[in-house]
Image (tube, rainbow, N blue to C red):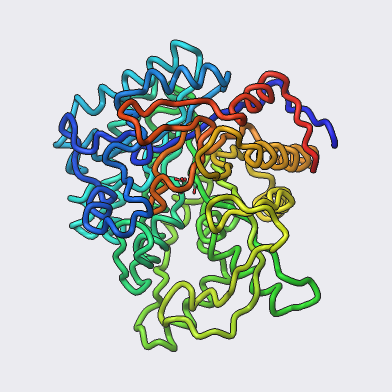
Length: 472
Ligand code: GCO
């Protein structure tokens, strides 16, 4: 094993999101979200039937949540604001004071104990009312989000110094609109998926510029975007076809979101423009399925982040595919197959395997392509069955922190690290069958009792000592 040490000013945190932990889905005037609708209309899609109606009941147990954060000794808590809780229709006219009160309380309690709130404005829970107007495929979604962001910035700019505008656009667009894996589950033939990409990016950038113009000088907060940057590695390295496939995978999975914001030249990655334009033409579309960005939009987006919120969990091995995918679709555009090393340790989630070298490689890739961007790891974590002896999570966190420290030794600008998740919660369509928490939640009990797992104790020790014996 190697001993590595985190710098003194490095920040450690833990994360959650509103739909996944709060419950109270229709209390105190909260509006319906697309996840409420989706889980109620398709109960068969939620693995163990446990949806976000009650979830971890953090709407009532937030004091206990803060107590857990204090036990861990974290520097910050990443959580999200439920748009439908504070603006039940999605529009400013519907403002719900009772909903805001919940976040007032949570934020004040955190600050009382010197824990910085890191607020995500959007973590997948659009109001159903806005979805009925087309949701993120409607270009007006850009201003809906900007209006919402303005209200939240105004209320909390004084107290919140870390902001994440939008979490995981790839999940929002590719899984929510390009497929029916996630809410709203509207398969709009991947015209919608790319429209969503453009709108979500512009919504992010508008919110960023708004903060920059009206709040930054006085409040000096940091605004970033949360992007899933897993690693995609060519299955073999002497095979040009697979190496090109890995390039495509990285571009479609995260380059499409990062290039417009973090590259010098801006706009979508050229490789994506070329592929989607060509395919669209072959498919008989009059214009490309990937919308154009105007010069103004490119400028608005370029540089619109104080840091990259990097969500990193795993690595995929990429092969070129000979398979015929449904056309048109993002899968067909990408034309790849993903596998994972059979020898890699598996988490409870089917897609989750431990390959810490992937975090190192992803960091190097970001440094080379986007000139050493400031990064906060806004999510990394591991899923298990229920049970307190989560040695596999301990191993996984240690190994990934080791890889992160190595990347930092090599110049990666990482300011902080966040474990997903503080506590067990509703893992979207997996319900509570996949547990990500440092704290176990007893979902069967009325009281939703929380108990520290082994990993909570280890994480506390890492935060205290700043030392990782990585074994990697
Ligand atoms: C996200 C993620 C989280 C998941 C976590 C484990 O978009 O931030 O989907 O909400 O719970 O990544 O899968």
